[in-house]
Length: 71
Image (tube, rainbow, N blue to C red; front, side):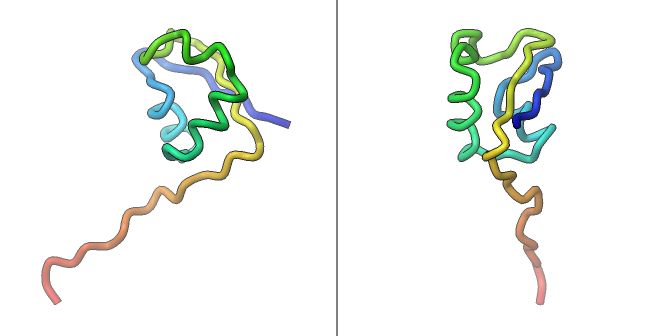
């Protein structure tokens, strides 16, 4: 089973996937394969575009490594 998400105004595919599912660049290929006509819409998705997210996609952790300026 797959999940569906909807684009907001000004969304790019990578921004939409990051905001809603925490997906990174490695997950774009699977999403584009599940939505073959999506690339033809251009870089900025039209408002309300339905994007099918395959179940096989794995989320990228949304945490960044801790950087300490002092010991």
